[in-house]
Length: 176
Image (cartoon, rainbow, N blue to C red):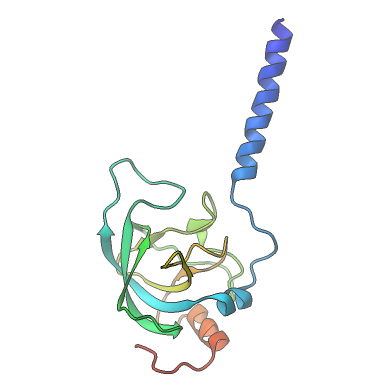
């Protein structure tokens, strides 16, 4: 009887590990930045301003954040928003999170490489290129798993920003 309890425990442990692995972030096919940019509904260069909804005292989640960060739109690269600010479920953090890969990025920045497939932490005052999709009447960067949908920019001449602008082509009436 003792062996069967140990065996049952071992089998259950393996099942739980497999379920955890299967529920982790996955995607079908490679990240293709050209496809991501072409499929986006709105692409903006924006600055993380502050919380519009503060995080709860419970702590952070690996799923959708319970707090909201307000971004000030500085430039429209693609699309036509009817607003100057954009609120995104996210957290404010204390350190930069630049993508260390070569441009064009074929993978999300470090903050999105574990947990939910998406980077959801921003630096207050940091500039970001947000590649957004309209989902349930709200723009979100959480639509292209493991893709570079919300990369922090080094400067206004950032190579990633330049590459995305080239992919989009000429813009009419871009905000600067």
